[in-house]
Amino acid sequence: MFAPQKIRLALLAILGLVVAGGNGTNVVRGQVSEPAAGVNANQSQGDLAVVLERGTLLERQRRWAEALTHYEEALRQHPQRTDLSERLHVARRHYDVCRRYADTTFTAMVDSLRDRAALTIYDEVLIKVNVHYVHEPNWQDVFQRGTGQLLVALSEPPFKDKQLAKLSAQQQVSLQKYVDQLTRDRKVTDRQQAVESVDLIARALQQYFQIAPQAVIFEYTAGAAGSLDDYSGFLTGGQMDEVFTQIEGNFVGLGVELKTEESALLIVNVIENGPAFEGGIRSGDRIVAVDGHTPKEKGITPDALADMLRGLEGSQVTIEVQRADGENKQLNLTRRRVEVPSVDRVKMLDEQAGIGYFRIASFQKTTPRDVDAALWKLHGMGMRSLIVDLRGNPGGLLKASVDVADKFVMDGLIVATRGRSPREDFDHRGLVAGTWRVPLVILIDKDSASASEILAGAIQDHRRGTIVGERSYGKGSVQGIFPLNSANAGVRLTTAKWFTPSGQPISGRGVTPDTTVQASARPVIPSPGQEQVAATRPASQEDEILRAGLETARANLSVKP
Image 1 (cartoon, rainbow, N blue to C red):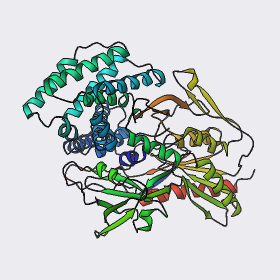
Image 2 (cartoon, helix red, strand yellow):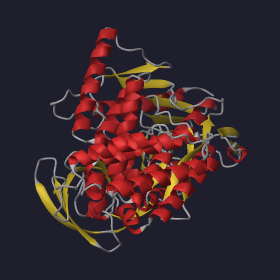
Image 3 (cartoon, rainbow, N blue to C red):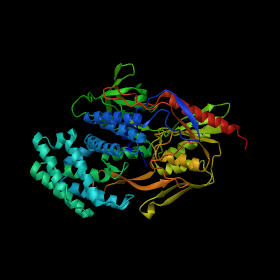
Image 4 (cartoon, rainbow, N blue to C red):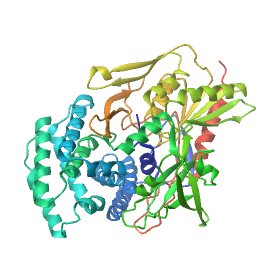
């Protein structure tokens, strides 16, 4: 159960590029603050004009990861704007094409499979959508989404360089018009008609434009899953590996978390004792070259550069790192298996008051075990109150979040899931045994999503603790990962919606803190031509949320039972 693009690298590329600004913060207890005085409709329209102008620039420069983040942030400010929503969906389609064609597991599959095998994969994806998706599919929409994905691919250099290299510019224009004519009035009412229609289109484009039919079919396959909602999508073999790596909590690599920039990979986090950490790499450094390749080369996108960091255990990679002071350093690192801690920063924030603290970075198989270890460690250090930090936590496994909530909730409902199929309807309940009764504070922010919202929602509804920070992301759905039998690939599909113990949906709403901490200044969105604003939240904002949590924990200890 992952937030948008919750394959870990993609998540950091999308949720990590947050445009932030403002220095002051204010704490508002028990309510959500209204917009600052003096912010009128004209100012709001002016802000929106800047948002659209900035988005247009990112699209022209084909900086799709940044465009995705830009439109997601804009929609949080202007949730009713359908034009922003549409531009977000278009940016996501472009990003998906570039991401797939930078993935060698995908390009190898396109090159090796014949059209019949590709059509079998398309049919299997449709079957899984029909059986597992939370809503009954509209086959006309599924077909049209596939056509939209194909048209986007026809305009993207990674696809064009591989599939349209022999066509002139005029022929490429004619190709797009032909696809539009071929699909405009086609009626599709069931899965079989969808398969037959895609087969016909692929054969026609092969006959008249010499395009590999399997390439066309795969765009329809990606479109069938990827446009169902923000969280469903087609998964290449490489992406499947990343998903299961995150679930298991270990991977082969360098031990870094990244986000993509226009000409580099920014190091967001370095896992202690991993190859990168031992090589001296730290958060804030940038990788500007991998094995001599840079994003300045044709066909080498930042995503492609990130893919080059992966490899077999024991293999070596040469990277060029740019320090914060501008100094460049070349390092030779050996890839190895790295354990990703889901719980870290276990410590006492106030030893005299007995206030313990730990952060849950994501929910994976090891998280309940790791939380147990942190709790007993803090207990041994004299813990009398606890702060659990979920800021920036994108989610993860539903079961892991339920198991962690069960450690603090005495009994009763933790979360309820409801889907199209009765097998998706389930009430997850806590058990009395093994409950920690320590006073609790939960820290959240706008990037706390999915499984982290399950934990925060359960704690809040059971009045088991105080929620402090910003309104959370608002992802109230459950995704299942379904490997394909016909290929080394899979699909991620939304299978159910989930609700807090009080019956509240979270989708689009999030968890509202009991104590809200937010920036007093409005977010800064740079105008075209301006230097990009730093992607991290201001330190004062981080500190203020933690200070408010610590203040709440101290207040909890002073309340007489």
